[in-house]
Amino acid sequence: GVPKPLPSVTTILSSTQTEETRKKLAAWNLSNPGALEKAASRGTWIHSATENHIRGLRVEPPSEYLPYWKDVPEALDDLLKNGKVLWSESPFNQPQWHKYVGDDGVGRLHYYDDKTEQGYAGCPDLIYKDENNEVVLADFKTSTSPYSLKFPKANSGIPDNVRKALISGVFKAKKTMLQMAAYSLAAEKCLGVHVDKTRIIVSTPLPDYSVQVFSFSRKELEKHMEMWLQVLRQFYENA
Image (cartoon, rainbow, N blue to C red; front, side, top):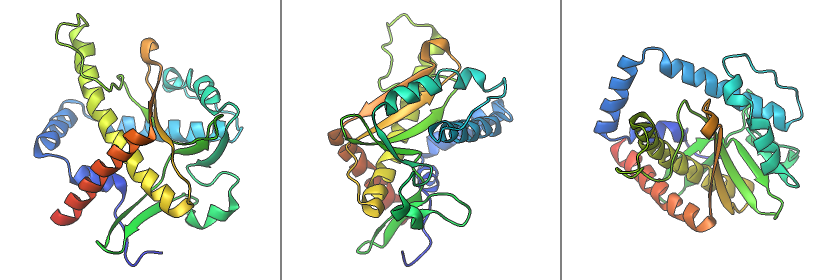
């Protein structure tokens, strides 16, 4: 247990955004009324669908979500082949972790530092052992446009709308890296696992980017963990 209620990972990330990011988001929301709610509903459905697929249940997507879902089952099966799922929104065949499931059936992990009295809570999407017996923590995202780890080159000759989407995709990927670092620290503290790598799994309705998988090594994860702990300190300093 922890001595006080803890903020969520998403609360910390939104509270520590720069003023510029806040203004851009507000402007985007104004020019795209209802888009945020639509994206949230879609994300909730995809998370539920992936969890059901992993648990061997039949998934029948509504037509509006089909472009986001159609290539996901095959990609998931490929990633999990010869592996072992440990956590899918909540413990998966791991009764010793059941204490981390609330009365609402949601799995929640936490990280708390007694010295600094700083901590947070959150729920990873997926933790599994891959075919090499390495522990992987993965996060699912849905997006109308692709994620990217690099900014496109100015002279790359790609269409302007794709270039803008990829620039936005870099920022989305960076935010997700921080989320996964937070969940990895919490998983290591609560579950006693050692996370060897992290993965972002992105589904989009675009044929060229239907399912994107970005993998990060333990060395990269440790850098992301350092960055996340800086964000956590900033949150508590400003609280």
